[in-house]
Length: 82
Image (cartoon, rainbow, N blue to C red; front, side):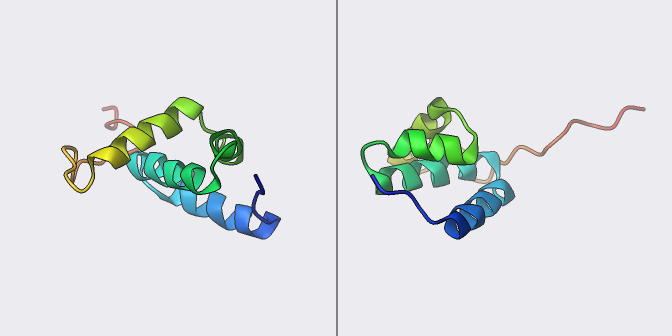
C-alpha cells in the first residue's frame, strides 16, 4: 500500500477536522477502502482515530442512501452553566 504525499495528508487532516463526527467516520472509511490492505491502519494513524471509528464509518456507509440519523448532528460541548 502506498500512502499519500505530505501535502495531501495535510489537506486531508484539515478537511477531516472540519467535518461533523458522523462525516469524519464516513470520510475515514472511504479513504481506508480506497487504499485497500493496510488502509485502515494508515488512515487511523493519519487522522489519529481508532480503527473502531473507521469500522463504524464502514457500517454507516452500508446504510446509505437510507440514513436513519439524517439531519442529526451532535454539537460540540454542552449547555452553558448558569
